[in-house]
Length: 620
Ligand SMILES: *[C@@H]1O[C@H](CO)[C@@H](O)[C@H](O)[C@H]1NC(C)=O
Ligand SMILES: *[C@@H]1O[C@H](CO)[C@@H](O)[C@H](O)[C@H]1NC(C)=O
Image (cartoon, rainbow, N blue to C red; front, side, top):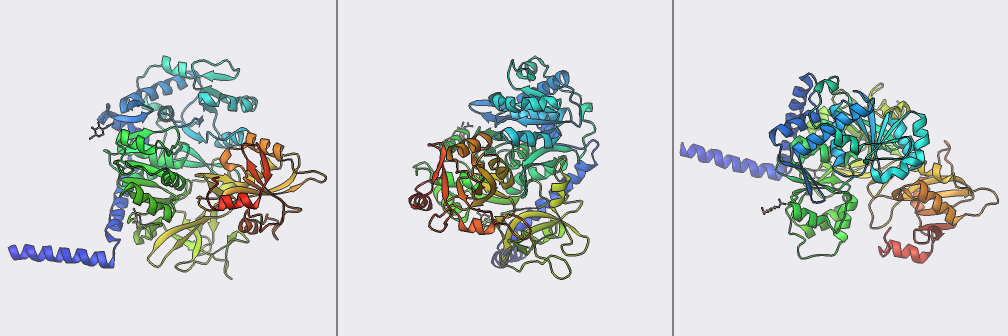
């Protein structure tokens, strides 16, 4: 008996060593598969429930289980699960009484990070309404455009954004939109105050009958994305899809005991779906911050015993750029979930702040595929997993960056890249991996669908992202294609910026693109423009136009004046060459300008400025 046990033990140890040697990533990947299967089983159980078991139901169960557990900690105030539940009952009741909202309607929320975000969303869910999460930095034309593409009939506005909404109010009222502001009174005609109505309302639960038709395919959210083309669009996040996003916390190993720090905007999928909705799924405590602050970050973590943080590449870099302190490793953070961290920053982060497990992931708001780095390979977003690929088929195909389209062979089919080569990620659209598209925008939805990839008649989701898979099957994010680029964690749609620029009096045409800056993630905005005949470049009026119509992260930081814009054979504006040429005055003969916030103008770009930027002495 004893010998038998020893034999088993020895074999197990031996097997373990062999696995480590031959398949160093076996254990995390096996866990990944197990978790995926467990999640799939849970989903199929929910699907059978009538009505569908939603994140809201999951929240209500958490309230029953742990009513007095802190749910949201914000600026020294703590709101328990029960507090938030009661607040959301008030929201639901006030909206039923004072508006004509009913199940199936959509409400747009124009609000920054604050606890109210949680109860307004939950309150709307309680009356069966979907919420469109407007980016609180957008203004004027973009705001109107984003609002109307969601199909919302009601707009709820933060107190601090009143002026911004007043600017577009006449157009909203013309379309019969109810505009509600989160204040206790309001003297603007056409706007109704909401806080006073919440306060009057009872905090008793509303009847579940108000949401009885919600199914797994009902929209829960609309999240704006510039996708890879054109103006921002509202990606439809169905109830089922929202569940899938919450799965990321489970996959990363978050538990109900964790304290989760959200400093990313709640209007993005990362903050809302992965952070906030994921927290509900786990029943954990959130520490919510209005805005990311590098100097406050670790103090917040220490003060609240934070164990899990969320990041984007930029936030990790900002943290590494702060002054070194003796207590840098004095915290309880064990896990970081996010995307866009660069390998060098990743290493520096771990060296400086201690052994935190970084779970780098790749996923698009509207996409139907995602990866996560579970084994901790620096720089990778994940690893090819045989089972995942069987269930969710995807591949990397050859892409022609000049023509901006996939390479096709003589039979008209796409060509898979070889190991180690960069290719466009496409993933098969199936019942299990649906692509829900964009609200009221069939044309853009269709653009993300790619047909005849491996066989005539097949259908794939075009991610618009270039990835690479190495010899060891690790997956790396390389770049984003098309008409958008990322800067400071936000997607910037080039055509939208070009539209705004061409409204400036002196500008005839504009071609906008993103250029890389040493020491920064993503790309910064740059525009090549042509001037109207007999016009000079008006530096200060261009600046004031840009500053009043566009959020700062989208501002074209460099302007290059050309006598004519390069056009490709298909009349697409030629960007690849411009992007490569960048903003070095030594390499470009055209007049070159840089935006200067202090002078509220564009000023000529000099070689000295260029060196300061290139050496990292001047931050953009
Ligand atoms: C953090 O943890 C310490 C030690 O367990 C505890 O004394 C302290 O009260 C905790 N702080 C908070 C805000 O929970
Ligand atoms: C995931 O991240 C860790 C660091 O936490 C790294 O060591 C590991 O190799 C990464 N795994 C993959 C598959 O990228």
